[in-house]
Amino acid sequence: MAVVIDGKEAAASVIAAVTEASASLEKEAGVKPGLAVVIVGDDPASHAYVNSKSKMAKQCGFNSIQHSLPEDTSQEKLEQLVAELNADPSIHGILVQLPLPKHLNAEPVILSVSPEKDVDGLHVVNAGKIATGDLETGLISCTPAGAMLLVNRIHGRDLSGLNAVVIGRSNLFGKPMGLLLLAANATVTMAHSKTKDLASVCSHADILVAAVGRPQMVKADWVKPGATVIDVGINRVAAPDKGEGKTRLVGDVAYAEAAEVAGAITPVPGGVGPMTIAMLMANTVIAAYRRAGKTAPRF
Ligand code: GUN
Image (cartoon, rainbow, N blue to C red; front, top):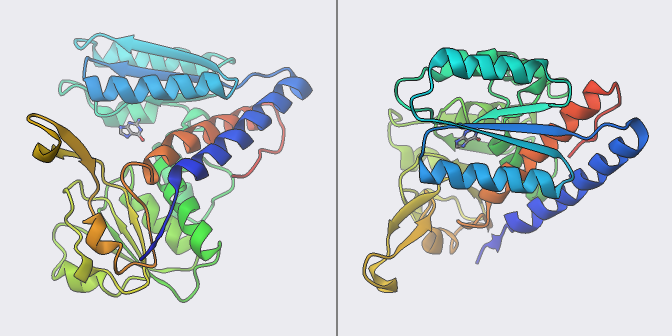
């Protein structure tokens, strides 16, 4: 049976370190890290995510601001709000929750966030820094940063000689994850929906990362015996065994059977999920340290 990688525990230790770093910045430089979270529209799942981000920011001792804009907000209005937040010295991190309503174009909004405040790590400047191997001066996208921290817990920081396969090639996760694994010396394959014989590609992975958004797609026979499996999927599926109309969360990996083969595996929920918010807090405190001219902590 695989070791279960406890994301809740790892996230709690990042949050404790962030809270401590935030308190010492306030004491030494009189600066309280400020995080502004912007949400447009009424999507209940997005509101739930954003509320937990705002709540965690308060728990870390941050100045936590939430802007909830109506569904019919214009592109111009949204970009104007971002411009105000860019200019506000009390705000060190800005996050615009995605996806945006259909009439809005996310790309220019992402590019309108000042790279120094882009705690989501989505601005082309921050994405470009990871791509060119600069992991020190930018901000790294939260979910890949969190997934990488879990990989490091199993394998250490140097992944020389290990094969890593990432399934999924989104800007939010797959691409930066592949680049972080590469920067750590893994031999990386980026697989996606057009990959031929995906099961066979995956079966060579010492580190298998699934981010496809398809419930339980990765089966036990895709997993190399002893591999580390990182499941980034969060899918809500019907759970008639729990009662009529009930649902449960499952990952992109068929957990029970994969856990029989893997060496280590993240559960869903309780694996990568809690790491995303923890790394958002880490990015915010890093941005605040840099703004104050102080050496930022590492997580
Ligand atoms: N929606 C789902 N995940 C994320 C994330 O990491 N950042 C933002 N901005 N929106 C999201």
